[in-house]
Structure formats: C-alpha cells, structure tokens
Image 1 (spheres, rainbow over the protein chains, first blue to last red):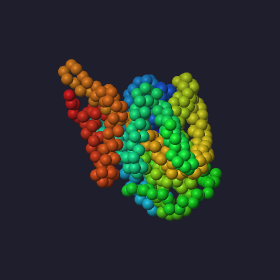
Image 2 (image 1 turned 90 degrees about the vertical axis):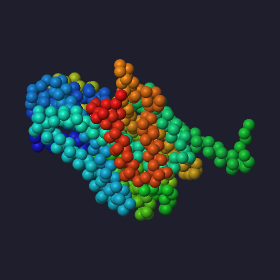
Image 3 (image 1 turned 180 degrees about the vertical axis):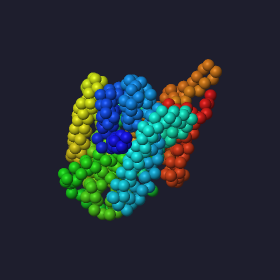
Image 4 (image 1 turned 45 degrees about the vertical axis):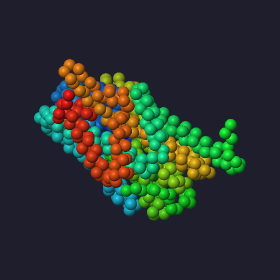
Length: 254
Length: 285
C-alpha cells in the first residue's frame, strides 16, 4: 500500500515532468505488478494498455490511476488482462477529468509567479513551479489509495459520480483547455496584433486545413516551416527595399 | 498587467552563455512541466528553467523583471525538445532584441520545437520502441519495461542536450545576421509569430470540440460535423477573439476573463456541447 502510494506519486510527477516516459502504461503497470508481487501479470496488463494509449490523440491523458487499478484488479481479483482493463475503465475517466480539472485550477498559481517575476524572486518562482506538481501528485495518490482500499464500493461511487456529476468534471476539464484562449489573447494584446492580424488568420487557416487532412501530428511543424518561410521572404523584401533606397532613387517598377 | 511595451534599458550585448549555465538550464528543463496550467501552458516552469541564463544576460534589475514578466506569457513546448526553444530564445535575449521580437520569436520557435518533439517522440520513438518490446511484455516479462525505459530515457536526455546546443548555436547565428537590420527583422519575426499563434490556437485546442447532436423525431443533426464544415476550430478562434476584445477594449482583468471561461465551459458541459464521455445535465433537441 505504502509502496503503491509512493509509486503513484512519482509516476504522476513524471506525467508532466522528468523524462515523461516512466508513466507510460507498459512501464507503470510492470512497476505496479512488481510491487504487488506479480510482475508477469503487470507486464501483460501494461502491454495491452500501451496499445490503447498509443492510439490516443491527446498526449496529456493521465493513465496512472487507470494503470494501478487495472493491475490491482488483475492481480488481486484474479481477472484476466482484458477484463481487468475493461473493469478499470471508470478510473481512466476519473484520472482524465481530475487531471483536466486540476489543469484549470493550477492557473491559480499564476499570480504568485507574476509577483515573483516583479520582485525577481527566483525562490518563490521555483515554489510556484513545483507546488502545483506536488499538489497534483498528492491528489492522485489520495485517489489511488481510496480506490485501492475502497475496492468495489469506491468503484460504484465513482460510477455514480460519473453518471450524475460527470458534466461538472467535463466542464472543468473543458475550462482548463479553453483558458488557453486567454493566454493567447494576452500575447496577441502584447504583440499589438491589429497591424499584423492577417498573418494570424493565415496561420489559423493553414492549421485548420492541415488538421482536417488527418496528418495532425505534423501540423505544427509544417506551420513553423511556413512561418519561417514567410519571415525570410518578408526580410529579403525589406533588404531589397533598403538597398534600392540607399542607392538613391526609387526602385524600378518595370 | 501589460509588460514589455518598449525595448530593454541596457542594450549592450551580453557575453555568450557558458557551457555550465546551458547545462544547468537543460537539467532544470526536466522539472519545468509541474506547473502546466490552463491559462499559460508551461510558462512558469519555462521561466524558472531559463532563469540562470536570464540572470547572466540582464544585469539591469528592471530589465530582468521585465524579461521575467514577458516570459510568463503562454508557452507550450511539448517538453521533449523544450531546450531547443530555450536555447534559441536565450540567444535573442543575449543580443537584447526588442521584447516584441522576442515574444514573436518565442511563439514560433516553441511551436516548432513542440512540432518536432511531438513528431519525433510521440509518433516515432515511443510507438516503435513500444511495438518492439510488446510481444516480450505480452509474454509476461518485466524486462520489456526495462528495455522500453532505457531506450526512451537515453534518447530523451540526449535530445534535451542536443536541443539546447543546436538551439543556442543556430539562434546566435540568426541573431548575428539579423542584427545588421534590426528594424526589418522585428517586422518579419512578428509576422512569423502571429502566423504561429494562429496555428497554435487551432492545434493546441483540438481537444475542445463540439459534440452536440440535435434530434428532431427520427432525424438527427450532428453539430460537430456541421461546425467543422464551417471552420475547424471555430470555437477557440471565436473565444480567443472575445478574450482579446474584453482585455483590450473593455479593460477586463484576466481574473474576470477566467471566470467567464469557467461559466462558458460549465454551461457547455451542462447541455453536452463538449466532446467526451459524460452525461449532460440537460438534453436539448
């Protein structure tokens, strides 16, 4: 139990920081299997879950809770791999939305970070960076402990929560994503977007075009290439203008 | 809080950063994801990671506070190649470019690092390694996890160091080229930055999509595909415009904007507007 709690704590930290590979289901489930004295079953559960997660679009899905409960069900209740993964699905839901809601709430640490920036206080900044991570890891540790000790009754509680208050969790998670719009708006204000709003619209249009073709993994990369091309072209255009102006007279128009 | 409306006070170029500082930033970058939040992405961790460099570059106290302020604005690097963006941005800071240029440059270079890192790790290294050890794991061998971890971990660490040195060297080269015509460079890079922010609004907000289905007797209308016909990503685009409008025209504070977003998000979830597996409070249509 204590070992599971420590593992969940570390893996939740790894989900957003460190190497960001330790929390992958294949590794996480094997580790939980080792702790629960059945590494073989842990590895088998991990392999099956890894396949599910590999196809997931969102790279920030939190599978730590899902991993631990699937392994617990497989080892302690003696379920076979696929049944355990299916039975633990409700914890995938809990992990995903708890993570999303926490992302929304972590914005509460921004005022602290801004204050630290005004005062050039590096220690306080480090605190504003580490604290949300530790709080999130603690939250998931508590959830995992509840799930582990609560057993069947906790699972039914979560299921009924999903049914009745699922929209609140989904709303908070959506808020966590939608808040980025404010982050973008602040940059747009500070770079005085009005004069160059055409480039913004062009970028959005290009990204929308590429996203709909389905090769979404490379969208940002392709857009970045286009952006650099745009900047290089604009820069060379100006270089020609200034060179002509230095020579004297206007540039030839014919 | 509008920070960075003008150039830095001390415009003398700083000394190049030494290897020790760069390595320190690489190690810090491993801890920069903790504070990932909805509003500004990884910005707190990003700023904390590049602090050793910023402190060496900005000896003027006011400039340092100013730089720290604008580095707290939205940034998302996808972690795996975050150092590539860090190195490139630091080389620009070192030349004391206008913060307007650094902001735009940061937007484009961090999105590029995110794009390369995502393609390299999430679509290439991780799936290939996982597939390679999968049959071993299915057979119940814990060694599969160890091999998986070792391969990806070594590559992840190597990518961070390579990213930092490539980013810093290339950034310095670019900064030298641009320094001859600083004024023109500002316009070009601002264009690229605006372009990338437009792209990021669409790409980074993909997870919020409408999923409303309206029923009329036996006929149903899928709102998500209808909205996609109109323009994919229309919700985040409109919301970003609304936020910009409220911030600049109506002088709203960010806190008020956040509250509005939470209300919109909860209301949307209540009627089942957002995609996902949940039971909406009210079924409409």
